[in-house]
Length: 353
Image 1 (cartoon, rainbow, N blue to C red):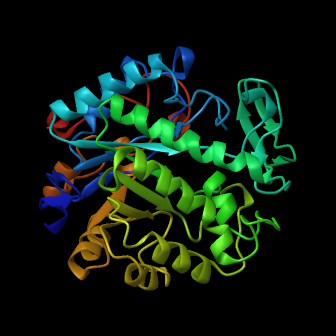
Image 2: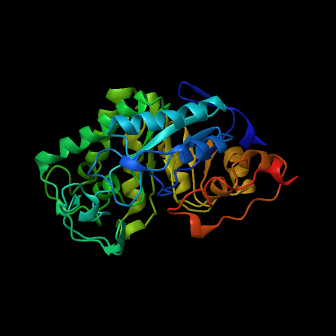
């Protein structure tokens, strides 16, 4: 299978072309640091050529959900280092996904109880998952122009801490309706300054973050995730093909580790133009299975294929694909929050033979 052949990713050799996609699991411990459960969870799934971790806060004001980890304290760095060491010991590479959620948050999740921030004062539909249960999203505070460089710097600082923890690189979460995505899309960005209006202006925050992070840790250690058709937290754009083709072309030529297109199923018409616009390693994600993932590699649509729920429920997914073996059924009741159940207790093939 082409999915199981080695690949090169920047300076790294990958043992296969299967990526464990980032998945929020809401199990961070004291100080929003990873726990020994995280070490086991990621080590179990080091059958992947590359692991991209769950989204991780770049700063203490970046959280949008209860029990999601950070990378801004010494204790968090030390805890993540144990995860990285366990994954490396099993022969896989691991990138830390960095996020700031922007408007997809609630005052109770912020250290000073202030309103979430966003490009524009437009509330998302729905409710935040807080320590006190689900609470409606408030109208966020629009960032002042002079504040934005400080938010760019948060990503660069977090990237430096990720390398300190031993990660092979970072993935910038520019997808799923979070802060970078909010700047990029015209449904959430109604600004009239240099960060709003034209495509060039709306892409400015993304590109400034990329430039700051690559200056901090090197372009070959930086991936970017985008979700051109995603609608998480009521994110929208009037012309996704135009917006994201522009963004992808602007990211090309920078020597980045990869572009990760999320929530785009194999049949989506945006796959071809975005593939053509990108000059580097491409990861696709969006409901791929064994057969469609194999076709994506064989056809040249992608270089790597990311799997979310299949890796969640099948720590040894590459082995199962190799033998066309049955997959464990995921327990969706345990996706978010909890302890061992539904997290580190999915059986591997060797346990059920």
